[in-house]
Image: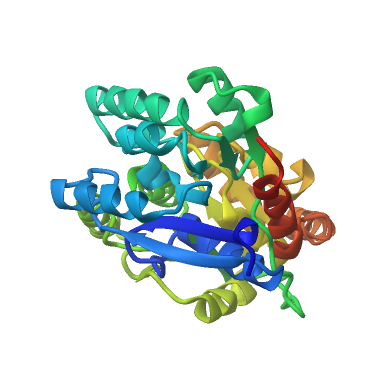
Length: 353
C-alpha cells in the first residue's frame, strides 16, 4: 500500500462507545478501507477531553512515532486539548482535525472551563493542515469563532443507511415516542419529561435510548424526575443499545422527539428521517440544516411550553403525523450515503493543502 494512501486515525477512548461521534468514526474508517485506504486506528486514552497526565504523555509518544509526511486524522475530542502536540508536529505531518462538536460549546460545563477549552482548541486549530467538520453549522463556527480560513474548513456530513422497509405507524390510539441521545444536559431529556408531565391524559409511552454513563449525575436527575412526575410507568430508560436493537426501536416507534439544546449535526435525527418518523426537535445548531422543514415540528431550545404544544398536536392529530411522516420519507431519499461521505473525505485527504 503506497504511503499516500495510508491514514493514521487517532481516536481517544473506546471506539465502540455508543455516541454519534464514535459511530461516525467507526463507519468512515470502514468506508475508507473499502476505497483502498490503509487505515490504522491509533487509540488514545479514555480521559479525553480532561486528558490526565498519563494519557497526554501517551499521545505525545504516539505522534512521535508517525513517519514524516504521514496523513493523520485526529478526532476533535482529543485534538482540541492537545495544542502542544499539534504545534510540535504540524511541520512534518499532515494533521487533519475531525471536529464533531466544539468542546467549549458542551452544555453543563462552567464558563471558565468553556473558555479554557476554547483557548486550547484555538491553539490546536492554528496548527492543523485542515479541519473536517460534520456539518455546515460547525464549519461556520470554526470560521467565525476560531478564524479557520474558508479553504481549510471542510464539511463531510455523516451518511445514512436507508432501511429496506418502513413499518406502518399508528393511525390512532397508543403512540410510541422515541428519544435517542446520551443522557447529558445538552440533549434535554428532562425538558421532554417536563413537557410530558401535563400530557398524561393521552395514550403514549416513551423510550429513552442513550448511554447513562457520560453524565451520571444528569442520568440520576432524569430518574428522579420520572419518579416525582409520576411518569416512571410510561417511560423506559433503556441505556445504550447496539445498532440492530436501535433499528428495531426506530421501526416500532411512531414519533421521534429530541429537545437538544445544540447539535453539531444530529445523526439520530437522520436515522429517524430514514425510518419515516414524524420528528419534534428544537432545531438548534445544525438541525434545521440537517432536516427538511416539512418533516419536523420545531421549537426554541428550552421552550417547554412550545414542546408541549407540539406533542399535544401529535397526540391529537393523526393527519399531522401522516404529513410529517410522508415528508420524512421523501427527505430521506436526499440524505448522503456513507460511501459518498467517504469519497468526499478521501478527496480532501489526498489533495495538497
